[in-house]
Amino acid sequence: MLIVQQVQQLLSACQPSDGTVKWIRHQGVFLALYFVVGIAAYGKLEGWGWMDSSYFMMVTATTVGYGDFAPTHPLSRLFTCFYSILGITIVLSAIAPLVEIARAAREAVEVAILWVVECIAGVKDDTDVDMSLSPAESNQKINYPLRYLRAMIGPFMSLIIGFVIGIWTLEYSWINALYWSVVTMTTVGYGDLLPLTVLEKSIALVYLPVAVTLLADCLGEIKDVSVRRRIRETDYVKQVDTLLLDECNGDPEETLTEAEFLISVLKAYELVDDATLTVIRQHFFHLTRHREWKVSDARVLDARMVFDELVHGKRIVQRTADDEVGGYRGWPKARSGGVQVVDLEADDGGFEEWMEMFWLPAVLDTGESKSRWASRRTSRPPPEQSTSMDKHPVRLSQGASSSFNFEDAEGPQETTSSGVLSRSRPDRAGGSMDAGGGLPRWTQNLRKPPRSRRDNML
Image (cartoon, rainbow, N blue to C red; front, side):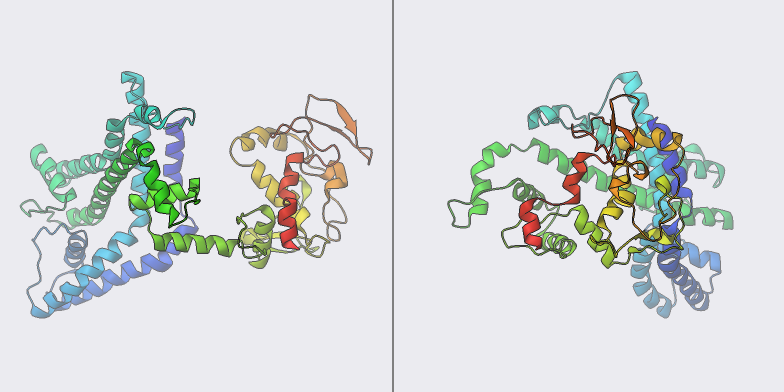
């Protein structure tokens, strides 16, 4: 099952998306300009053709440096001093879509290899975190050699691809093909074995950046595994006094919270610095700016604040009679671009309607809830569409027209105030479903904050 999911991710990575259009408008334009200007410059100063110039720029940008092409004109060398630095930045950042496809392929191969290793050798890397275990016991369940092996899958794939290119395209012996692949991937670039024809250089234009990037990713992953291992193996019990002393700042009554402990560990291993933490806090303060807070309040982001932010950003707009009806349970669909429509002129500003029509379906359509309710949503016929949808927002009290009136085969039937039959059953939080609108009672905590927070809003 995991292999199928990885293959699906690989196919989705190959499909054009909004990110592809954005790449063409930004990195793609710079990449094209980089080659166009370079081809014109080296063609004028060195007399190279377009393929030789492109090949030289790619070999330079990936730092492979075979040495078969080198500038000889003084102006060409001066141009290369600046253009090589620019090329490393542009090329390695612009090939992101190609690298993403290679990474998706690597992850698919990784899942297949781990499945084979687990089935044959019974070796498994346990990534589940059990809070009932001690840190030392959890660390013993992790197979670090297997994790280092997983990090090396990318370069191994690159090595095989280079070996095949050396055998079938460059027509090397198997030793020379392996030798050329390693020398190229590691950017050693001795220059004794080289692509010569137009076809060989064209293949090198694609293979060089992918091979170099996969090796760089491998080195970064090995470093990350090592840092995570050091964090897991650190005995913070022996550092308990030092941890609190670092927070005291002369105050003997100071305490150390879990968040402060997490930050101190991240800073100790240079995974984050003070400037980055400040920027992250600024982002969260900006997210929660639509509510008045006291200095002593712990800021939280809730559904009401999300609604206010979406309204402020014009991602929720006033519903009109022209909006297309036929969304979930017969409600209006979101407009193009994901713009949601509600009655902003309602007493609550459209918040209750937004909760029913967009937010709660999105919450229930994530994780296990998606598969849990998918059959119910597809098996039942849509309700009769309201003729007054353009005038009045959908209310929870409308009973049968509410999106969360989940009929269940089990449980007693109850009659609502409107005469509609519904069934009550336990919800995920252990309560029951509201009889009238079918909305779980646990969602009331989403719809209005606690009293102390409501007072701060007034």
